[in-house]
Amino acid sequence: MSMIAAFYGGKSILITGATGFMGKVLIEKLLRTSSELRAIYVLVRPKAGQTLQQRVHQMLDCKLFDKVKEVCPDLHAKIRPISADLDHNDLAIGKEDMQELLSCTNIVFHCAATVRFDDHLRHAVQLNVKATQQLLLMASQMPKLEAFIHISTAFANCNLKHIDEVVYPCPVEPKQIMDSMEWLDDSIIEEITPKLIGDRPNTYTYTKALGEMVVQQESGNLNMAIVRPSIVGATWQEPFPGWVDNLNGPSGLIIATGKGLLRSIRATPMAVADLIPVDTVVNLTLAVGWYTAVHRPKSTLIYHCTSGNLNPCKWGDMGLQVLATFEKIPLERAFRRPYADFTTNSITTHYWNTVSHRAPALIYDFYLRLTGRKPRFTKLMNRLLKTISMLEYFINNSWEWSTGNMEMLMSELSPEDKRELRSTY
Ligand SMILES: CCCCCCCCCCCCCCCC(=O)SCCNC(=O)CCNC(=O)[C@H](O)C(C)(C)COP(=O)(O)OP(=O)(O)OC[C@H]1O[C@@H](n2cnc3c(N)ncnc32)[C@H](O)[C@@H]1OP(=O)(O)O
Ligand SMILES: NC(=O)C1=CN([C@@H]2O[C@H](COP(=O)(O)OP(=O)(O)OC[C@H]3O[C@@H](n4cnc5c(N)ncnc54)[C@H](OP(=O)(O)O)[C@@H]3O)[C@@H](O)[C@H]2O)C=CC1
Image (cartoon, rainbow, N blue to C red):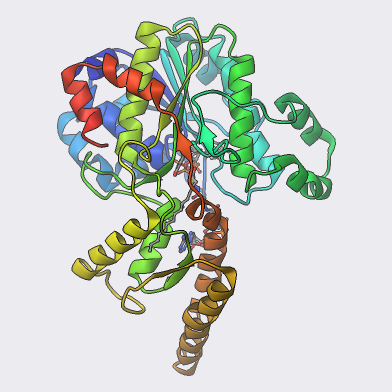
């Protein structure tokens, strides 16, 4: 068994964001490789009328967990759902649950966040800043805590071209931002948001940067680390290739290309596509948890989980690879034969959006109406174009992330763990 997997044996682990894309892969990897772990506490909010037990059962029923059910038959007993809602200042965790979390937790993986680019600043601050502060406060009352791993994003400082593994200060202190959210009304917040986020493209990257400042300022004596993944895509190898469960980031656009919906996108073919498979992110995150707990670095280390300077890929290459894949393995019921071109200026982008996106959707919806069916393509196309407008910033710029800490961590791993982590780069 790998040294890292053995480390998690007997441990009680608290995961926030456990029902999310990354959270699920993290749970799967822990249960599959460290089945001797004591418990995984998952903070889950009741959603869409489901109880948290129903949500956890539904989560464990997905294909991702097929392999782990063979090696960890008692996986349901290992998972402890805890009702919580990070939209509430006290996280809406019950007294008894809180007592158990405080007394038992050895490792915290804080993955929960709002990852929407267009979230209202109030909500993004609540989830990505205030909830992080609350979790740090909880962690400071955990006598058995060995490490707290905070998941940020490599784009938290996307307003810089070269990004080091350090926490960069934001112009306004997080505490002032959180206090102002208490008394400003929504319309005033909307008005001042562009000024506050400054040269960052959205509230997501801005509040992730604020969250990092809170970690730096309020972690006290906690044994902390921050992991900054770049653009997280489907699984590369574990537990099987190609697993993804949402349309975020590249996934939605790749599927839209395969369905023949997306025919052109404003992108810079030579810009670096810093994509990273979710199982690589999880392997690095578990290695960071082990290293932080065992080696107890003197300060909070930040680890860039990026591929650009280790195994660079350009958007142009990625686009060709996507099209070649759909040539070999076409999606069912495609609207048109997949083809996607990169435009480089807004005039041609506008032209192709009209000719290749909006007009065909309108015509097809007209045909659906004529044949007595509900039109849906115009709405879908508008959503897709809105998503693209939010993502364009990231596919028309390149960044350089230093990876000294990540490479140091690699040098500390056993040959087996190193193979596992390096194999996914
Ligand atoms: C040639 C190949 C080129 C490939 C080119 C790749 C470029 C790839 C760049 C990535 C760059 C990220 C770099 C940051 C790295 C992080 O840290 S990203 C963290 C993850 N965050 C994201 O990706 C957030 C991006 N998405 C959003 O913020 C929101 O989805 C948006 C863009 C504001 C859209 O919001 P919205 O219109 O309210 O849509 P949303 O609520 O998300 O979904 C509504 C409906 O649309 C559907 N939908 C959502 N997204 C899509 C989509 N992309 N397509 C179709 N339907 C969709 C949903 O399924 C949903 O359907 P229903 O449930 O209503 O039936
Ligand atoms: N995906 C990516 O490309 C990247 C992601 N990251 C970071 O990784 C982390 C995980 O991202 P990812 O898995 O993609 O995101 P998802 O949107 O898939 O998951 C977000 C998680 O946070 C939970 N959550 C959201 N709001 C609340 C709330 N009010 N109370 C309790 N839980 C809540 C969600 O629970 P629920 O199921 O109830 O909604 C879900 O489990 C985030 O911190 C993100 O910033 C960093 C870089 C890239």
